[in-house]
Length: 211
Image 1: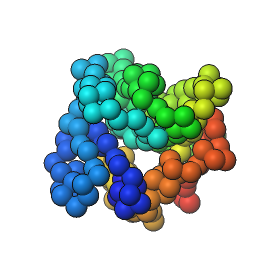
Image 2: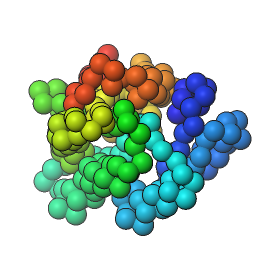
Image 3: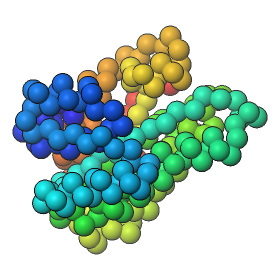
Image 4: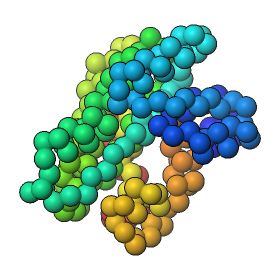
């Protein structure tokens, strides 16, 4: 996000808790923040109302919402699975559909997946719900790329490896990643701006380590 703002792009940031974003907003006037939960229809409606009411259009979007469940599969309930898939897959699908009227020609939709969602990659116990949902997200983006290939709208997925974030600490306590959130944020920012010049319907593995 900081990368895009520093490049002069207007950014609309969605979060269930925008307190840290408000600090960034003091530094960058081009940052808009919306306190919304996109896993609910009311939250998605709020985004649509903001865009429509302010006559905004979108050059791209980064789907970075994620819910991690680290739990043995034998103890994982259907409610657990639905909860993870609601955030990691269904909310992405629904928000994308809701935002279709606002995309400019040539817009780029980028979904943030995980190396855990890549077939054949190393898997870890306890992450059945999370990693399988990230695999579903990859396939969803491939299908949307095919469906909208004649509509001048590109869809790609970045399958990230270990990045030093709160979610990584939760999944692998004590593990120290070699990639910082700031470094990966700049990579994602650049990719949403120009990655669709070379890719559409692709998943790129962005990792220098396992996990």
